[in-house]
Image 1 (cartoon, one colour):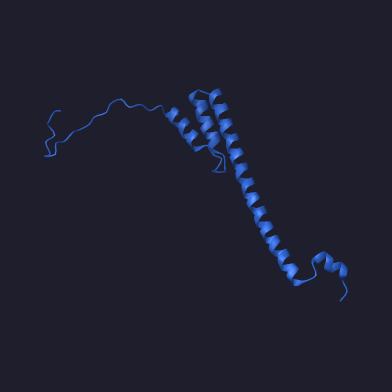
Image 2 (cartoon, rainbow, N blue to C red; image 1 turned 135 degrees about the horizontal axis):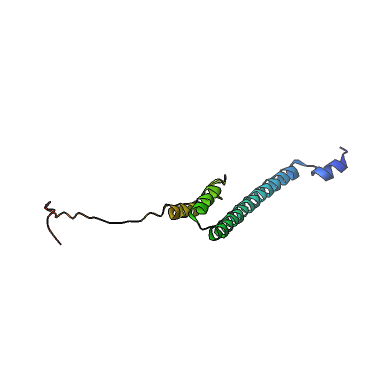
Length: 118
């Protein structure tokens, strides 16, 4: 038979090889799960960093032009999971400065008379 050194290094028999490949398979699954968890944690940290920067800059730059530039700046972030969409919408709402001047409601009676005063 010979090759004792190779047998001791590579397991020797087919049974031992299959158990080795099974343990490698489960080991690679654990590594993949761990790398997925690490990637998710990294995305969370990166997103929090973007939000921190947004908060810092938006408290520092408060004029309408500066807010517009901040909205443009943060909309250029290429990864959608990092882009602060709600915060950008908030800035755009502040820039728009829309107000409601008047609300008119028409009330119709069940029978269709619109002249009924309430």
